[in-house]
Length: 237
Image (cartoon, rainbow, N blue to C red; front, side, top):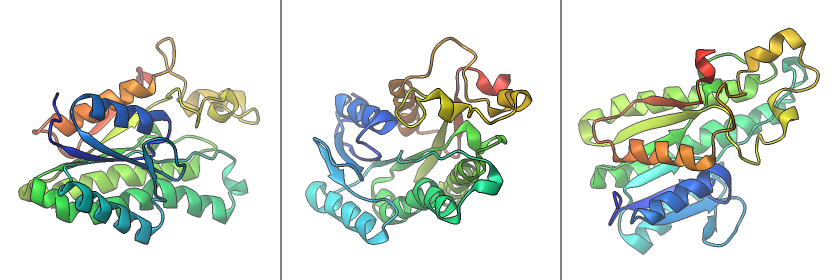
């Protein structure tokens, strides 16, 4: 019960890594507020790209629970395609959800995290640590998440707020469950290995394994600014 008496905000909580993260923190004693654009049982509606909605959601957490200790920025989207075919709307949407969303949530939450000496755990990706063909927008957005994480970790290091991120490889979630999303048919054969989303070890990483990494960083009081890779050895290939 590492998180007894802690109040935890989880974005993207309706499915995948977000749902697993909300469940794990709840099982370990936390009061969890899960938010998502998709409303489901126990999940509050919030579009993380909408500044007013984010500010309202964080204010509601404080009104209901009196504090905020941990923020898990999990919400994300993935769209693949050749760079020259990326529509500007797709680029903006990818950055809005994957990068601006964590920025807005962190901005709203940090005044309260300063009071609780809490932490933020973002979800990056190994796509933010190396180049991938047909994935420029996602790589750019997740690289931004990693650098946002490091910048905040440094800025708030002496004020008691820790900020780290988890960088998954291929995870068995609805977002990337389709093999065609992992390696599109039109990617040349000699480039497919460079996508590096297919794990070397047998099987996909499950959402619960990423949730465990998120919980580890949230509980590890000596860790801040980390980009913890959880990819079944993919980046070693």
